[in-house]
Image (cartoon, rainbow, N blue to C red; front, side, top):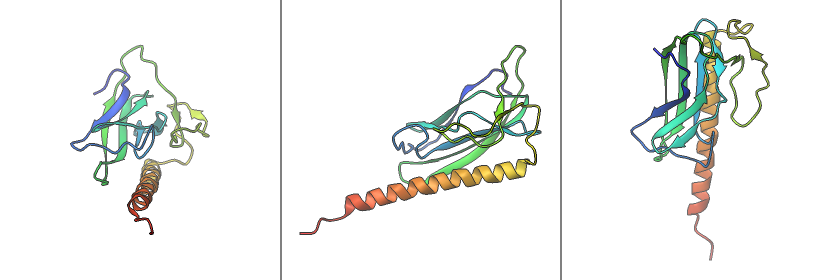
Length: 160
């Protein structure tokens, strides 16, 4: 059980990860919760260092939170998973407001910040998880396509 604001959530893999030159490039990490009224926390940016991918986050209301992450190992394989943890803030903790829509790294969130006690209208946990997975999958497909085109162009033999 987590009782202090984490500040950073990280995942360390047994493979070195592909760092495509900065925050949010090729990796994604989203934090949602609590399960009873899920909102998004953090800025949607993920950074890679060696075998670790991480994101900055401040949590909201107490409850169970889910971290969904996806990145690319240096051998080009996409790796992803999710895990949950229980958040029970100690007295005096500052709680963050969550976002109704998934944040996109490098852009201002267009959704208004919502009070953590109020669930977003018409949003269910299943819809939220499905859209989150689609967002992460689309991002990684675009990154893998860019890597493939770059490798193709680098391996082309010049014409005599």
